[in-house]
Structure formats: structure tokens, C-alpha cells
Amino acid sequence: MIDRSPLAEFTGQVALITGGGSGIGRAIALRYAAGGGDVVVLGRRREPLEETARMAEKFGGRAEVVTCDVRDPEAVTAAVNGVVGDLGRLDALVNNAAGNFISKAEELSPNGWRAVVDIVLNGSFYCTRAAAQHMLAAGRGSILNVIASYAWHGHPGTVHSAAAKGGVLAMTRTLAAEWGGRGVRVNCISPGPTETEGAGAALWPTDEARDRVLGSVPAGRFTTPEEVAESAAFLLDARRAGYVTGDVLSVDGGQWLGKAVYTDPRAGRS
Ligand SMILES: CCCCCCCCCCC/C=C/C(=O)SCCNC(=O)CCNC(=O)[C@H](O)C(C)(C)COP(=O)(O)OP(=O)(O)OC[C@H]1O[C@@H](n2cnc3c(N)ncnc32)[C@H](O)[C@@H]1OP(=O)(O)O
Ligand SMILES: NC(=O)C1=CN([C@@H]2O[C@H](COP(=O)(O)OP(=O)(O)OC[C@H]3O[C@@H](n4cnc5c(N)ncnc54)[C@H](OP(=O)(O)O)[C@@H]3O)[C@@H](O)[C@H]2O)C=CC1
Image (cartoon, rainbow, N blue to C red; front, side, top):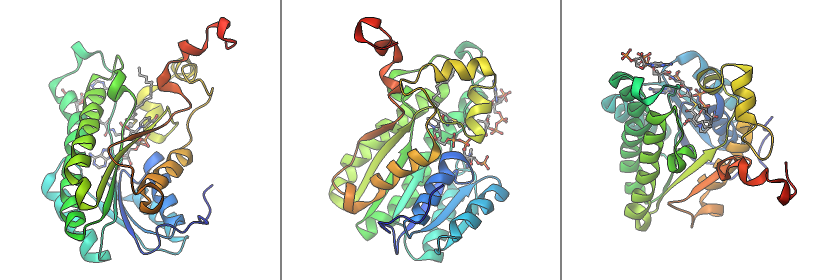
């Protein structure tokens, strides 16, 4: 459980976290609040967002809730402008909202493809565009995109999500270069398999599938949302990561390296 951060690095600052009502998004919101910041959590369902806000307020800062579908660009712009109107500033955006399910590519319907790409890639762009208008005007800001390692190595069964996350990675690098001289940093964080409300049901719904995923992680366990949140706090903090932009931090127990590399007995690992 996250307690107040000894750094208090976000005191006086404001973060907007999409998908902040569950899993990794909630952990990032709570870590930001523990660091003294104010948080706004955005998603489609009000109830889980309000639960995050109640938890965040215990750290003493402000916490607000916005219901919005990131696939709706007008609603996103209104939500972001509302944050700045209510809280006076916007220092950080975390594009964490996502949709996912497993499907053979040849059986995936156009609408299934569209649902995931719209949430992950288009939604991240809409939020980024709206937030950057304020950040660039202020000359400071940090945008963190939550991706997955299959953005660069691919993964059978998740072509929609892998393609969308790959697009977010390219967007991150492009915008880091475009805005690097104007005070706005853009980075990615790449969690390993993490047991959350959405991921377990969508990606490893059976014990057999769960064991197979676990078997792919050299560290031998799932990532915790709090581990992702701690690294997210580092990347969001301008004092510690002010010179880091356009990069990806993997928090995955070595999963993307490929466990096969480590299971050769000649290397002393099995
Ligand atoms: C083999 C994989 C193992 C993975 C091991 C490695 C793991 C590490 C990396 C993990 C990386 C990433 C993880 C995540 O992103 S986890 C987050 C998961 N969270 C969620 O998905 C929560 C939100 N989800 C949703 O909102 C929905 O699932 C959805 C994305 C579908 C969007 O909901 P919406 O209500 O807008 O959409 P619809 O229900 O109307 O559906 C739209 C079309 O999509 C089709 N669909 C939906 N589900 C499925 C399915 N399970 N299989 C096939 N098709 C599906 C649906 O039928 C609609 O299409 P049609 O209109 O053509 O029918
Ligand atoms: N868990 C894992 O193993 C891994 C996760 N990731 C990434 O981490 C991030 C968080 O994942 P995780 O916590 O597991 O996921 P969850 O499914 O638990 O959370 C996803 C959140 O996104 C919100 N959301 C989904 N669609 C929309 C939408 N259209 N508009 C607004 N909000 C939306 C959901 O709220 P609501 O339904 O109320 O809208 C929910 O709060 C994602 O980007 C995911 O791809 C990366 C690697 C591994």
C-alpha cells in the first residue's frame, strides 16, 4: 500500500490520469496524490473513479472525477479544459485507458479492430493534443503513455492492441522531438503482465493461460500496479527525470527479453 511519498515531489501540481478507476491507472493516481499532487481521474464509469478519488483525497490533496470516453475528441477537449478551469493548471497527463481482448487476426471484425485502436491510439492522441495546448502555453508539462512491450516485438492474438501501442510509441518519440524545446516531455512506461480488473479477464481468463503468462516472466511473478506507479512517478517528476524524453521504461521483471534466453541450462538458469 502506498503511503505519503517522502519526496512530496508533486506538491502544487495537477495530473490527469485516463482509466484512473482501476488497476494501473488507480495506482498511478494514488502515487501522484501521495506525492502531494492533485489528481483528476477520467473514465467511462463514474463509480470506480469516485472510489479512486476518495482514496486519493486521504493524502490531503484535491481529487476530481470526469466521466468521458477517450474516443470522443470533443468530450476529451471539454474534459481537459475543465480540469484547467477548475484546478488552474495541468502538469501531467497519463494516457493509461485501454481496451483489449484476444482474437485471431483473421477473425477480428473491423469494429473490434476499431474499438481498440480508437481507445488506445486515437484516444491517446486526443488527450495529448488537448493537454499539450495548455502545457505548451505554460512552457512545462509531462505526458506519460502506458504501452506494452508488444509495441515493438508484436504478440499473436492482440494485433489491434499491438498495432495501437506501436502507434503510441511512434507518437511519443515524434512529440518528444517536436516539443522537446518547449518544456513538454513525452515518455512511455511498459508494464509487464499485471493482474488488474481488465487484464486478467481479457488476457488470461483460465488458470492454464495465467500459468503460461507467468511462465514467460524471468522474475517469476506478475508486476504490481504499485511498481508501475513508482516508476511512473519518476518519469513524471521534472526534478528527477527532467532530461528524459522520448524514451520507454520497462517495468516487467525482464519479460520482454524473452524467458527462453534464460532457460538454457548452460547459462545456469532454468
Ligand atoms: C495471448 C495474449 C496473452 C498476453 C500475454 C502478455 C500480456 C502482457 C501485455 C498485456 C498488455 C496490455 C494489456 C491491456 O491492455 S489490459 C486492459 C484490458 N482492459 C480492458 O479491455 C477494459 C476495457 N475494455 C473494453 O472496454 C472492451 O473490452 C472493448 C475494448 C471491446 C471496448 O468496449 P466497447 O463497449 O466499446 O465495445 P463493444 O463491446 O461494443 O465491442 C466492439 C467490437 O469489438 C468486438 N469484441 C469485443 N470483445 C471481443 C472479444 N472478446 N473477441 C472478439 N471480438 C470482440 C465486438 O464484437 C464488437 O465488434 P462487432 O460490432 O463487429 O461485433
Ligand atoms: N495489466 C497488464 O498486464 C498490462 C497493462 N498494460 C497497460 O496498462 C494500462 C492499464 O491497464 P490495466 O490497469 O490492466 O487495465 P484496466 O482494464 O484495469 O483499466 C483500464 C481503464 O481504462 C478505462 N477505459 C477503457 N476504455 C475507456 C474509454 N474508451 N474511455 C475512457 N476510459 C476508458 C477503464 O474504465 P471504464 O471502463 O470505466 O471506462 C479502466 O479504468 C493500459 O494502457 C494497458 O494496456 C500494459 C502492459 C500490461
